[in-house]
Amino acid sequence: MPDEDELLAELDESEENESPSPVEEGSDAAIEQQFAKQPFRIVYQTNNFLLPQIKDLIALGDDVNLRPEYQRRLRWSNTQKSRLIESLLLNVPVPPVFFYENDLARYEVMDGQQRLNAIKEFLSNEFSLVGLQILSSLNGRRYAKLPPRVKRSLDRASISAIVLLQESQVKLKKAGSERYYEVRRFVFERLNTGGRRLTAQEVRNAIYGGAFNDLIVKLSRNSVFTRIWGIPPYQNADPNEYYEEPARQKNALYRSMGDCQLVLRFFALDKDEHIQGSMKAMLDRCMERNVDCTSDQAVALGERYISRLTFADRLFDGHPFSLGVSPSSHRPVAGIYDGVMLAIDKLWDDREKLLANKVALQAAYQELVSSARPTQPTQCQ
Image (cartoon, rainbow, N blue to C red; front, top):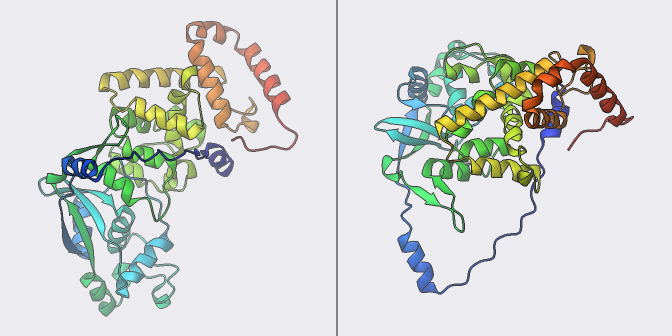
């Protein structure tokens, strides 16, 4: 099994030191003209939902999509969930959640996924309160076991929801760029500039929607991929259940979307002209290059990736991308994954020759890895 801490450190993307773009000089009249021509206006309304209403909305799943494709994966611990419940019982102001109306009376959760999920889970008796700092006597209690007065107080608590209405459905053009934002993704990115910091891959998942991003997520669920990287396999038919699997939620690579970042690296590094600047910049540019990828193009890219991945798995007897070829020393490394996958891609027409010389190739690989391995292991960056 891979060491999750070392692997996440290896996947950590160094931030680019980008100089801010120079401000274009212009007259007040020119600025006002640009402002007047800007079609982007948010149209929204504010609603209040009692906690039982929130539970019903999410549980039924007909009116609220808790996990649109641009949302992050669930990351709150039971302690964090419990303290939200405690705040609601103490009438501590809780930030509003943000919904996006994509069809009449149907909403996507843009911000507040963690809070809404915590409320739904507690009112469904899915976890006990832990780590409460003020109402510590409630620790260990589930919703069904709360004293009647406490339960009534919680049932009367409410969460404010700001709903972006359908009238806001426009696209924004980024200044000095050909890139367009959908309003929901633009607002999502702005909402998540504070609070718990999103990983770079979570941000990409939020702002680069489309067939290519969907492909990245789909490929990260491949059974060969999850086995190699030690991620619990996907077995449920309902896509929503992918986010609920407890074992997978404990996997650091999955929680941070490091699995999707690994898939993306293959496409970001596949051509020499793409290898320029920091890893973060290369991954961002790859998403931007493919933002208009069609469904047919995505299918072709997916077939290419899976064929190279399964071949690598076969070539190294089920233990590719490792510092060693034996099962006991198997620990996949992102840097080795990059090199092996790209080499196989470039030598794809000679794959039968590679298989025919598998034993010699593994021996040469082991010798190369052993000679390059430092005396004291260091983390790849």
